[in-house]
Amino acid sequence: MTFPWWSLLPFVAMLACIALLPIIPATSHWWEKRSSQLIIALALGIPTLVYMRIMAGTGALIETGVEYVQFIALLLALFVISGGIHLEGDIEATPRNNTAFLAVGGVLASFVGTTGAAMLLIRPILATNKERVNRVHTVLFTIFVVANCGGLLTPLGDPPLFLGFLQGVPFTWTLGLWKEWLFVLVLLLVSYYSIDSIAYAAEPSTAIERDESEVTPLRLEGAVNLVFFAAVILAVAFVPSWDGKLLAEGHAHGAQLVPWREIVMLGAAAASYALGDSRVRFEKNAFTWAPIAEVATLFIGIFSTMAPALRFLEQVAPSLPLSRITFFLFSGSLSSVLDNAPTYLTFFEMAKSLGGPEPLIAGVPEHFLVPISLGAVLCGAITYIGNGPNFMVKSVAESDGVPMPSFGAYVVKAFEHLVPILAAMTLIFVAETPVPRILGVVIALAILALAGVRIARAKRSTRRGA
Image (tube, rainbow, N blue to C red):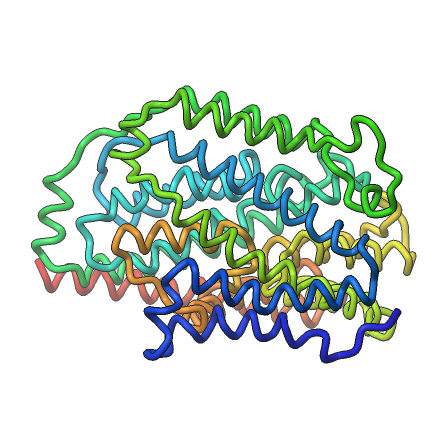
C-alpha cells in the first residue's frame, strides 16, 4: 500500500484549525466551545479513518484507537490525582523563587512524568505569582522545563522513552543522557531568571508590595494522593497493557485482551477523586474538567489525522539523508507537531533497520538512539501539541486568568527562547566534527551573555526605582 502526499492534508488542516481559529475574530468565540472543537476533530478525523480503513484495513484503526486510549488514560489519571494535591502557601514571587520552582519541576519530571510534574506544580506556581502582572513568561518556561525537557532521564519521564523501554531499552540507559539534560535545563533556567528579573523590575510597585505582604509558608495538602501517584508510576513501569499490533492481528488472547495498566491507572484516579479532600480539589485547586476535556477532544482529531502522516513518513524514510544530526532534526521537528511517542517509535524502527556501529541498544545503534531520544523529548516543547501536558498547562493558566499566547505566537516564543538552546546542545553533543561543536559553544556563551545583560539591566532598573 502507498500513501500519497495528499493524505497529509487532513492533518495539516487540523493543525491549521488549532493555530488559526482561536486568533481569527470571526471564529475565536466559536472555537472556545468544546462542541466546536469536537465538530472540527470529527469532521477531519472520520473521513481520514475511513480512508485508513480502505487503505490499511481494520488493523490500522485498532492500533490508532489503542494508542489514543493509552495516551488519554495516562493523562487523565495524572490530571485527576494531581488535582487533589495542593501546595498551600504563597511565597514571594521573586525571580530566585520562581527559578527554584522550575528547577524542582525539571528534576521531578523524570520521576513522576512530565504530565504529573506539570499538573502538580502549575497551580502553586500560578498561586505564588498571582499578585504579579507579568506571568505569561513563567507559564511558557513551565512548559519548556517541566512539561517537556525535564522528562529526559528515565522512561517514566516521557511517553517516547517509555515506548523505548517496552522495546527493550534498559531502564537506566536514559540516565546516560544527563549531560544533555543538565545543559538544556541550566541554560533554560538561567534564561528564565534573566527574563523574570526584567519582568520583576517592571512590575508596578503596588503589585510588589502585595506580593511581599501576602506571604504564607508552603504546606502540602492532599498528601494521600501521593500514594495514588505512586500506583500510576508503578503501573506504567510494571503492569502490562494492550498491544495494539497483537489486537489488530487477532493474536491477543486471554489476559492480553485486558488493558491492565489502564485499569490500574484509572482505578487510582477514581480512588483519588472519591477519597481525596473535595475542599482541596475544588476550592483550593479550583479543579475543573475543562483542561483534560480540551486535550481529549483535540487529540481525537490529531490521532485520527496523524495515522496516514506517520505511514507516509515510513514510506519516505529510506530516501532521507540519515545521520546523527538529521535523526535529531527529523525526530525533533516531527515530534513538535505529531504525538512524540509514535514518532519516536518510527525512527527507532528505522534506525534498527539501518544498522550501524556498536554498541547496540535493543538492536538500535546507540550512535542513533541518542539523537532520536533527544529530539523526541526536547522538541515536544516547540508547539502546544508536541506533548500532551502543554495544552493542559495552557488551559489551567488561562482558567486562572493568564492571557496565554495563541498557537502561532507560542511557536515564535519557543523559537526565541528554546530553539537556540536546543541548537547549541545539538551542535555540542550530537554533531560529530569539531567545527559544529565550536559553533555550539559560541551559541551557548552568547545565550549566557544575553542573560547577563538582562540581569544587569534589571538591577539598574531596580536601583533607579528605589
